[in-house]
Length: 94
Image (cartoon, rainbow, N blue to C red; front, side, top):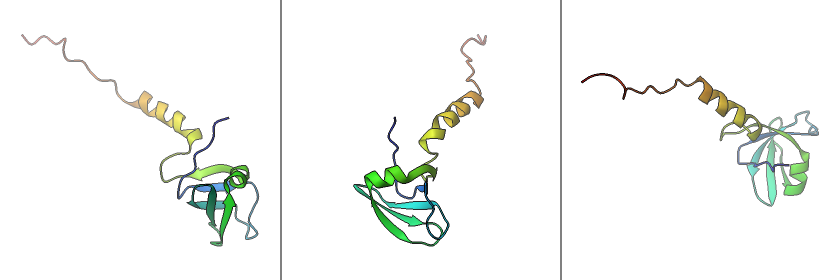
């Protein structure tokens, strides 16, 4: 299984809801411990990396682009839609 990479300002969805009823959190600190902030009530919590990684359901958004799971599909689509380069070296111009 591939290990996920979490970065500052990622919005993650946790498996359990916070008492305020929200389940999305913003990552404020990354390292051996994670500091996350509830997007509903603003509560800040620190968790050890192991507990944080077990609790995350998915990455909702990232300021660095799409989460890893959707990145490859988008990249291949962009390349498929781009026009093919034209080669003018075979033209007869004299």
